[in-house]
Image (tube, rainbow, N blue to C red; front, top):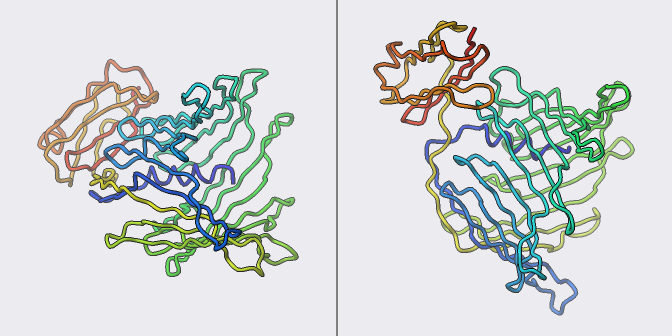
Amino acid sequence: MKTLYLIVLLCALCASAFAQTTLTLPRKTQVYYWDGEASPPAWVAAFTYTNTYNTRGQETESIQATDAINMSRALNTYENFILKESENQSWDMLTSTWKTDSKSTYTYDAQGRQSTITMQSSTSTTPLVNSDKYIYTYTGNETRPTTIVYQEWDATTNTWKDDERDTNFMWTSEATNPAGYIMYETQTYDAATNTWTNSERNNSSYNSTTRTLTLTTEDASGTTWVNREREIITYDDKMNLTGLLTQEWENNAWAFETESQYVLTYNSSNVLTERIIKIRETEDEELENAIREVMSDFQTFVITGSAEQLPESSLAVFPNPTTNNLKVALNSVEFKDAQVELFNLQGKKVYGAAIPQRSLTSGAHVIPTEHLSRGMYILHIKTDNNKEISRRVVKN
């Protein structure tokens, strides 16, 4: 399940949020490990995370340090609150500087959907070089991908080579399912025959009553699928992780592999202040303390959520295709002003204007397109009360 974390990340980016929400996050997290050999056994301080956020509560920096000595740092760069770059760095004690170990660059299409994620890595003696890449493809105006291709960098030919792809997605319509998908298949690429071959299938099911998510991985065996492993994940009423049971398929039955339990503590404002992780690696042993995280120095953000998506029926664009100008009408929507923009498929804005409600609802607004090259464009409208809609238009 190489790209599962990317799928989850993508679903989070595409999901609509409430108009306003309050988010409280820790600027400091002290991490301890359990010393069972001590007399008496006790928690021992290991390291501390210090976090910095932007005005929307998105993490921009996280520094890991122990005894006031830097260890590692994660940096995130945003553009209009959309993630553009992330870096992982390590502290060079000889030069007292941060050294970049890996970097990821994120690109999006004109509709704001993930297009690519390009990863680079380095060693202590080499600069950043390409390593991995994910390419997302979509059908029509769908916000969730139909295929995600994973590529590896070939340093000999200086080209990207296909390696795997996730495809045949079945996305869930349940807003409560944390996975976001019902099923997808992973296929491997054979360059010699230019063919894709089934490798594994990943399934998810969610019980909203018990807040239990089950993720099952199956291996391809000819034309059938055979169970390999599964994870049973439980959440509390705030959708924070409380349990993780991993099992393997043996002798036509699910067999225990590992189990983790998360004991969570909240303050009077329902903010998570402590997490204790207990684990066991055999079924006949008790869960034992492993890691403890204590959060402090909280910062609260009041965030305006992502825009409400308007129904397709509210927007009329005509003529489409067009050879001259484009008329736009937005109906059955309450607003005062709206930003009307037109983008080409490279993401470049070729038109933009703030239009009053009267002009836009009457169909009187005209976008001049006669000077534009033939091809497809994306019309995007966002109102002053945080509602938006997009539509493909064609210039002949």
